[in-house]
Amino acid sequence: MNSFTRTITLACATALAALTSTTASAQSKGLVYYGFQMEELEYRAGDEGEKLLVWDGDAFIGTDELKLRWLGSGEQDLGEGKLGKLENRLVLQTPVSDFFDIKGGLRYDSPDGPNRVYGVVGLAGLAKQWFEIDADLFVSEKGDASARLDAEYEVLLTNWLILTPSATFGIAATDDREAGVGAGLSDIEVGLRLSYDVVDRMISPYVGIVYERKFGKTAGFARDEDEAVDSTFAVVGLRLQF
Image (cartoon, rainbow, N blue to C red):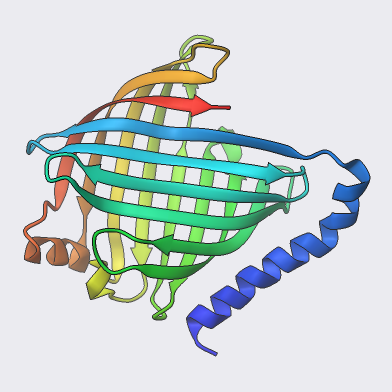
């Protein structure tokens, strides 16, 4: 059994265990929730003249004990008119503590390049001091393993004005030359956004700044393709929640 198969099996086992342990409770309560949020829907203007449309959102349906979630993100290069990144994840998620959920499922990447299917297992929730954490382990159909950690914190300047620092770290266990990812710390993205909640907090326009950097072999792969290794962006966008 290769690593991809093991991860798919683990993801399926996580989902099956969640379904088995929570179906009776969900049926007895009969309370099904659903929602949608677009955490980022923004225009980025880079220091090298880049113009990007970037999005990151998710939707869910389920109970307090079990949710089916879709998570999607992407990046469109408005200058060159091509898709840079496109990722979709479909996972089942269930609580394992008062503050954290475990999740398992599949990820499908279909950017302007080789497509990839990944098995996914991960944790999402609130850490101490109310840091929002989303951590995932991925194993591709080719057996390449990688991980990603997202951390975010909301600073309430007023009841409606919110400052949100965020950071994303990518780590790979093996080289995936076709996908442009090298072993080790592959990339980071840090951001700082200032938003203002309006319309019952369903719509929050924001401005901010984002810095991206690639490391190690990932940076080398980017240089080979004449891509930037680091970039700084001014951003303006909307956060939507329904």
